[in-house]
Length: 209
Image (cartoon, rainbow, N blue to C red; front, side, top):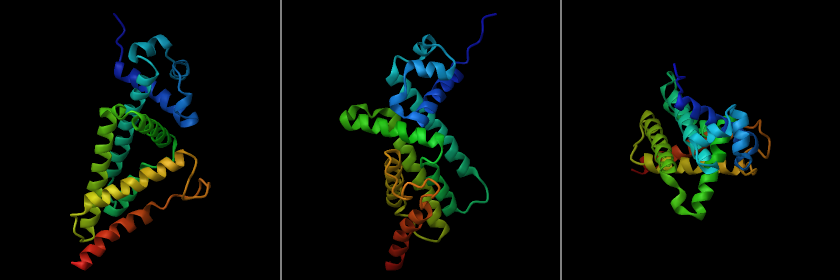
C-alpha cells in the first residue's frame, strides 16, 4: 500500500519551522536549508511545496494568520468575560509578547515593507488579514459600548483607532524601540488604558447629545 501523505499537515510543519526561525532570529534568517533542517524535511520536499523563499514566507504568513485567528476565536468564545475585558484580551493577543505573536508581527511587518516599495505585492492574503483584524476589533468595540449603555455608531472609528495604536506599538517593539516599557520586557503595555481612552470618545459624544 502506498503511504498516505497528509499535505496539509506537512505544510503546517514547514510553516511552523519558518515561524520558529522568524521568532528567534527574524525574517532575514529564513533560508530553505535552515527550514529544511528545522522541519525535518529535505530541501527536495520543500521545493515540492514552495517555489522559493518568497513562497515559503507566504506559506508561513498564511499559517500564522490562521494561528492568530484561532487564538482570537478562543478569547471570543471564553465564558465569563465582560465585553471590555474581552476587547482588552483580543488586543493584547495581537502584541508581540510571546514567540507566536513575535513571529506574526515580524512577518507581517516584512510584508508591509514589501508593499511599501511595491504596492502590488500586498497581496490578497494581507488584505484578508487587514479586513479580518479590523472587523474583529470593531465587533468587540461595539459589544463593549453596548455593555456600557453607550451608542455604538462610532464602533468602526474607535476600532480603527485601536487597531492603529496596537499595530503601531507592535511595529515599534519589533523594531527595537519599545515605547511603553523603556526596554523592560516585564512591564506590560497599557492596553486597558488604550481601550478606556478610546471608549471615552463615545462617552463624551453621548454626553454632548
